[in-house]
Structures are given as structure tokens and as C-alpha cells.
Amino acid sequence: MPTMTIQLRSIPDTQAAVGWAGGHTVVVDRPDGKAGGMGLGFNGGELLGLAIGGCFCNDLQYVAHDMGVRLASIELDVTVALEGNPLLATQAMMRIAVTAADGADVTGVIRRASEISTVANSVRRSFPVQIVAND
Image 1: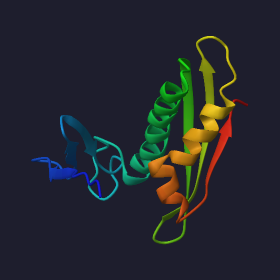
Image 2 (image 1 turned 135 degrees about the vertical axis):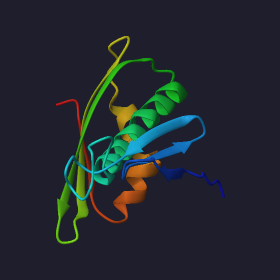
Image 3 (image 1 turned 120 degrees about the vertical axis):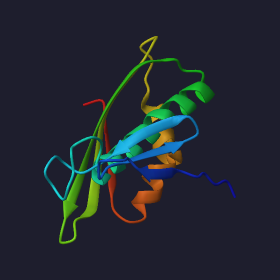
Image 4 (image 1 turned 180 degrees about the vertical axis):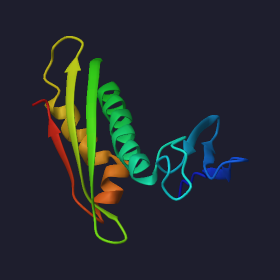
């Protein structure tokens, strides 16, 4: 079974943390003034949205490559709904616009990416992830 390790460590003189995997880093913090946050990085909900959307962007590229389609552009907005106390993510919606370099129909690329998306399919087991394409 494949695994990956992500590490996080506190940043001196802040209450934020830096996280990394391989050579890539991200700063995690709370909004400025909230529970000691300084607004230095993404909060957990934002990271969840980035994980859902970022994974889907990569999956679109994987699928397009496998199908021999060259994508000209991807525009993707993720909205994560939070409810309750403590706040829980209850739904995510991705609005996407994808165009092929040659103007080809990308419906099949989007459908297949939705079927294989690791993060979206993982969180779908807990709450709905809706994908609205090319509207």
C-alpha cells in the first residue's frame, strides 16, 4: 500500500507551523488575532479546499495525458461548507472550467478525473463533493 509522510513543525516566535513533504512547503496558521494566529498561512479548512481542488487539477492533467488531450487551461474554485460546533466540513463544491488546446470536448476528461480523484473520493466517504463543470 502506498504511503506518504507529511511533516509539520512550529515556527519559532509564532504559533504557526510549517509543513512539508519532499521539497514542498506550506505555512499553517489561524487568522490574525484568532487564538494567537498571525494570518501567516492557510487554516485547516483552506488546506482541505486546496487538497480537494489541487488533487483534482492534477487528476485532470493525468487523465488528459492518458487520453491524448492537451489541456489549454483549468480554472477551479472550491467552496467548503462548514457547520456545527466544533466546525466540521459538511460539503464541498468545485466549479471548474476546462478547455482543450484544440477546442475538443473535455467532458470525458472531467468525468474520468472525478472517478479517480484520490482526495475527492476519500472525503466523499464523509460528505458530498459536488463537481460543476464548464458553466
